[in-house]
Amino acid sequence: MNRPALADFLRRRREALRPSDVGLVPGPRRRTPGLRREEVAALTGMSADYYVRLEQQRGPQPSEQMLGALSRALRLTVDERDHLYRLAGHNVPRRSPVDTHVAPALMRVLDRLEDTPALILNALSEVLVANRLATTVFGDRSSATGWARSDVYRWFTDPASRAVYPPEDHDRQARSLVSGLRAAHGAAGESSRAGDLARVLLAESAEFRALWERHEVARRFEDHKTLVHPAVGRIDVDCQALFTQDQAQALLVLTPAPGSEAEEKIRLLAVLGQEKFAIADE
Image (cartoon, rainbow, N blue to C red; front, side):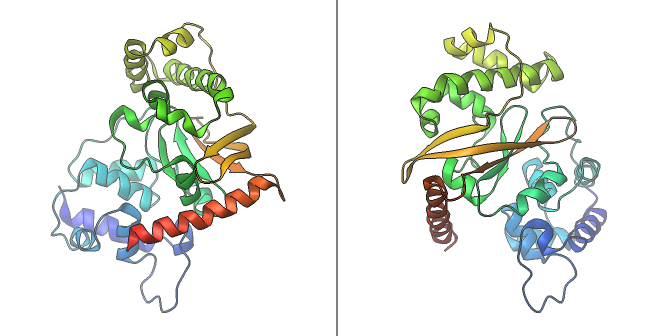
């Protein structure tokens, strides 16, 4: 671990960002260029004291999970992320079509979406980051670990995960998830994480095995979705996907029709979500 170089790199990347780059509203009396240290800490989920110690060359070695969070908070490119890992004394994550490092270009768009649910997924349908409204609609998945981070895995192993879709849409959603995993498997290869996930599900789910044998391949997101929320009921939204150039990640934006009942429900969920997060932050 190269503490001096790590501290310098973190400081310079922090100072190169503006609050608006990460979805924050610039406040008055900002004497420090770029983001404040406590803002970076909040974006990564670490304590401000921990982050300060990193920049002061006296912190412990960050975990790989913490480095991933720092990479997202500081909007690092893949090359910058790899450099961060090396400075911290860790092996560089393998680059693959199912990389979990969020593309900075998608993050910049997500940061500006506050009034509609939006989230970024990789090719394994792992939610890499979501805005507050998406978390309110789909639930908080930030604590999930292992294969439970993947929508595909949860769909075929945890019946409760299907509750966000109405029963009549379950078959279509199941086929969509499997065909997307097929596409990732074909791009990444048998020995990839996509291959590992497919083998796990082939062993655990008869429904998955039947759909996998159909060999349908597609990275598709329906133009229209109906979601179900316990507080407001059914919500009809249009789904737009913005892909990275290599198709490895997608930003999904869910928008209700203007003036519709669904739009009112989204506004209500925004209020409910703000109240929930305010209580959690106390």
